[in-house]
View 1: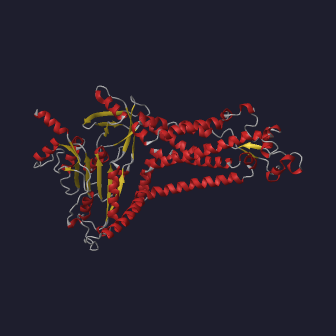
View 2 (view 1 turned 45 degrees about the vertical axis):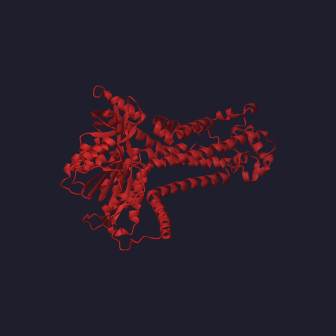
View 3 (view 1 turned 90 degrees about the vertical axis):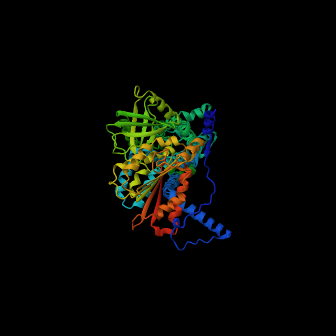
Length: 627
């Protein structure tokens, strides 16, 4: 009976919710600025000040988080608009296309202008997903830019490469919609011309009777009884256009957040329809249905257009207009990105063929498995970088990213994988028979991440929530293994926020080794481990073992905190610490976790950086993991 009651109590969970609390902050934690008044302001002053501060904070959040991205997107948008307007007026005013405009009006100008913008965005769409190219730029960039602020500015742009890829995808959908709409109008106009008599469009449609060189309407020889969608599908642009639309719809609809997170396989395979998309867009214009006049000197459309009934008779218009199809230009736009992306995929394929020697599989609680392996030709991953894994027995072409949790000094590479999705669950099942049955793995990488910049600060604050701690495992191991190699880094503040004690098993041993190895460097590494949920049994265990020298969950001398961290107080304490430095301190805040924690730390960094307490000479820089 007692056992049943105990089990029942253990099932009760206590959740710590964020509540409005009054915190009594010690006077020493406040910035030592005499201009700050401790007088309680009136309600009107408080509201007006908070309103101003909210606007100022919003503006600073925009500057810090979005200015670089918005600036690049603005330039990209201006280029799109400029290309569209320039191409539109080129076709709108061109004498070579005078007679084609007489048939389909400015449907021609809109179609050609949107086609140019499509080519431009298709040129860009593959570049943000060339991972090896981006890694090469990330490696070269810090060596070319000496100013740390500009270097961080540039690197953050590369961290947004997937977001830029999405924006280009939206633009391709928009310009495709405009292009298709314009050509539907053009098709209807070319068909309706057959119902006109004694008009310039009607005469132009009958020019094929003079010679094939004078033909301008691609549908003028088709039997009127068969004019329908089939006539359009009998042309190369028609059939490839339909295929392009189908591919685009499937790629776009499978790219939603719901599909990506719940059915990643659908997203991955649908995205590879881009191969068909690019093939069709290259051959889309090869038939040359858009025709321009070639004999402008012998037949001036500005004069002869009004004399269309006297063509062949009037001395100024004795020669009929002759036309030729426009040459396809899409392949010119796509040549460079396709070559780069082909080289990218070849390099990935070669990497995937290398033999992966699995050394050990360690199963942790909370559905986490650790894979340790070696590869012969793989570049040694640096702290904070990530790799792509695939399991040949699950899917031969499906790759998934995972942060490397091993240090460069270790003789193996390790990743921690939480088995919560379809692919990761299957991977966990494949390793149930290890070491008797070992599935074959493919590895691609390593690739850079925001954590690459961790050793370029005077101090760092590492914040991980749950499995989000993985980017910092390799960093902490590397610090332990090479303490003298990073002279600039003076302080490390490590925050790990978990909702269950079973998570501590993942890195508890590593943290204990770190605590032991860094005893001769006091204040260098500070642990702040938080537990946000606990059972009644765990609460009693904490009370009974509170006097122990080491924490009952982690085995560390630093005890586990219960609840959520108060970053406001902690950051102020960091500011007021004596670092024995005269120059300005740069502190990097690295976070991998839910969006609310990221936004909280963003606001806090900006508030502190904007505060009048700049005499503290401390600047906080936020870095967040994106994948």
